[in-house]
View: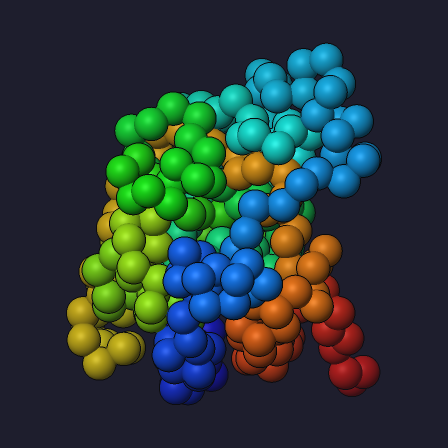
Length: 275
C-alpha cells in the first residue's frame, strides 16, 4: 500500500472525534472561570532568567530554525526570521515546512513524534502585524494564523509526507475555523519556502480535492512565507510540559494517541520487526 493510500484509506477520526469540542479561549474562560482553556501563563523562574539574558529576543542571523530558539528565551515573540532564505538550511541536511491547521499545540505535538523531524516551533505567520503577541492574534485583526514550523531531514521524511500528514491532522474544508474555534488565526494554511515546495503543495492539494478526502473540497490557503514569528515561550512544547492541563488531557492527548496509532511506523519510538 502506498503512503497516499495509507493516508486516505481511513476515516479521519482525529478530525471527527474532536470537532464538537469547543476550545475557543474566550468561551472556555467564561465557562470554566479560567480553569480550562488557553490562558496566558506566568513565566517560570528559569524562563525569567532566560528572558532577562542580553539579546534573548534578538533573532540570530543563521536562519529560521535557530531564530525559534530565541522565542523560548522570551515571553514575547522573538524577532522574526526572514523566509527569504532557502528552505534548505546552511548545512544542506534539513528543510523547513510552515503549516497551520487550528491549534498549534496539537499540530506541534504530533510532528514532534516523527522520525526525521529535528525541531517544531509554534508561531504566527501570514498576517500584516510585525512581531504579534498571542493576545493580538486572538483579536482576529492581525491576519496571522497559528502555525508550526517543522525542521526535517528530507532523506527520512519528504515534504510531500509532511503535507499528506498535515491534511489528516485537521479539517481543511472549513474557512477560518476548526470546529468551534472561529477566526482567521485557525485557518488551514500552507506557507511555502521555495518554488519547489509550492509545486509539491499544489500537487498534494490537488490530490486531496480530486479524491474528495473529506467529502468536499479543501479551502486550504497556499501562499509563500514572508516572515515567521515564533510564539511566546509558554506555547513551545506546550503539551509535553502540560499533559495534565484540562485541554491537553481532553483534546490534545486523544488526537496524539490516534496520530501515533495511524503513523506508528513513522514514529521515533517505532522498532521495525526483525526479518
